[in-house]
Image 1 (cartoon, rainbow, N blue to C red):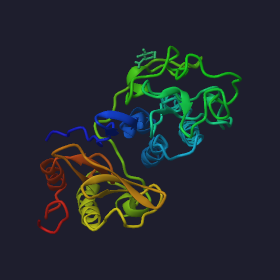
Image 2: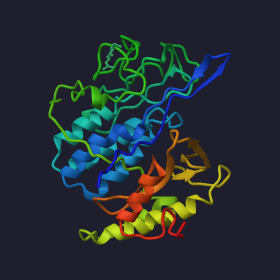
Image 3: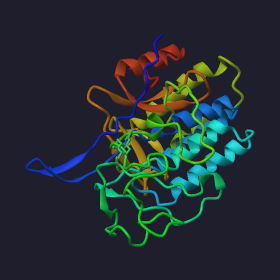
Length: 318
Ligand SMILES: *[C@@H]1O[C@H](CO)[C@@H](O)[C@H](O)[C@H]1NC(C)=O
């Protein structure tokens, strides 16, 4: 059986009048930003601790979180690395994550954190910007040079604007991932080493709507397969009843109206899946749990069936 890469469709959304973009949102496939860190974490023996830290981290790249949440998430990634013999790959990819550009709701640059990180490995690091971000104006309207537009510890604006230690020559291509561009975070201890990436992007956190599937237990090899399938079916049944007016808890992830939904400020924000794909909860293959992804209906059904669970996507026989 072939496992397709699961991609959450996050595209560039533009509002326009007469075809002229006014305020273009600049986005990315946020889950890609932690794939390599999570693979390193798994390899280092982090087990079930890896995925929740990764999921919490990539959520900070959305437009809504505050300016220091990305750095806080990178600190959590380093904290976990320190419990795993200071795994160098985990530290390197956390340093790169701290520099990944964040989504911009309106093509303006994203403000910088104004606090020191907890771990010294992150000292002096700040996020790059995407090339489509206006280097002169920051989200919220601040002009470059004013409060929040200069990274912590620096006294003048980033030069060239939009650059970071991992790409010192300038901002990076819209939607691209630093971990695809470089394996050098640009700090003195950075070492380049090859790392394999996981084929499946995990999206579930262990809270709220997804807790049924993410509940922990000891996974004897093979024993979790059928349970994962049943958990995915339960989630799909639950998701089919959700609407954009359903209440939710911050950080919940779900499928709403066939789109990928994240709970921001008590409301689901839905990102439509790409044409001919649908949002579904899917059983993980190599470990206990489920993931939420945009994929084709037939792929979703095949994955559920492969787990041994019967009754289709929702288990109702449909
Ligand atoms: C790094 O920055 C330069 C200048 O903005 C840019 O031309 C280049 O494409 C960036 N690298 C990548 C791989 O995005």
